[in-house]
Amino acid sequence: MQLVRNLTRLHGLPHGCALTIGNFDGLHRGHQAMIERLCQRATELTVPAVLMTFDPMPLELFCPDQAPAQLSSLREKIEDARTFGVDIFVRVPFNRAFAALDAQTFMQDLLVAKLNVRYVIVGEDFHFSRHQEGDVTSLREFADRQGFEVVAMPAVAVAGGRVSSTRIRQALAGGDVALARRLLGRDYRISGRVIRGQQLGRTLGFPTVNLRMCRRVAPQYGVYAVRVLLADGSEQQGAASLGVRPTVSGNDCLLEVFLLDFERDLYGQRISVFFVDFIRPEIRFDSLTAMTRQMHEDVAAVRATLDS
Image (cartoon, rainbow, N blue to C red; front, side, top):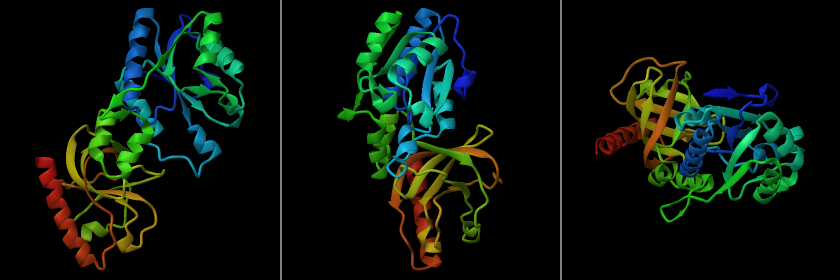
């Protein structure tokens, strides 16, 4: 898969392309259905399947305090897009200059001049350009004049409701990992490089690998049964604690994972932590002794969950 990180490096594709545009936060089952149709049409037209997304997401630029927790990092989106068969991943740096583009400029300069689109598939509620003045209707009218095809993808329904990034965030915030899995089509994950922590867990008999959360996280703070994909491709089971560690007066949010029956040093390595089940919410203990006692119970609960 080709990765284009900046529009200045994007030049017209001689034979055109099939394109989808959106935030694609989480690349959930609704997104996957759209990508499947995109790739099918790209094959029929003998052109590359192109996914275009925005980074940061628009709300993060204009209303950072109101921006929701992201379900996936840019790197995770790229990894998933490759898995789902996308040929070219285009990351649009979303800034105020780009946000100020009017709908006509967006369609003419980006879709036609740079991408030479022959097919575009977007969600039914797709909006774009300055003040979100562009929508599916205006895109279709433009496409009719330019001679390319536009398809509006209907929402995908799962578990009695529409699949959306918002619904997945709500499920994770409520500890409903199983519903999040159904909506995503796979386990929710958090990826990152292992950092050196306070090493308190090691003194308590529970050495952990730690990931610092550089963005707001969607899941409820608490303890989880997890699977961990290591840099060498192997997979381990673990008990993970996500939160601010109130018992030891922590401030920053950390994901701390105790890998079951595993002792290798993983500092500096990139790992992916897949959330399998929610065990309990984060709580503050009166002492380290009480916390250690609970950690033994948590690990036992995680083993039972992962062995079932």
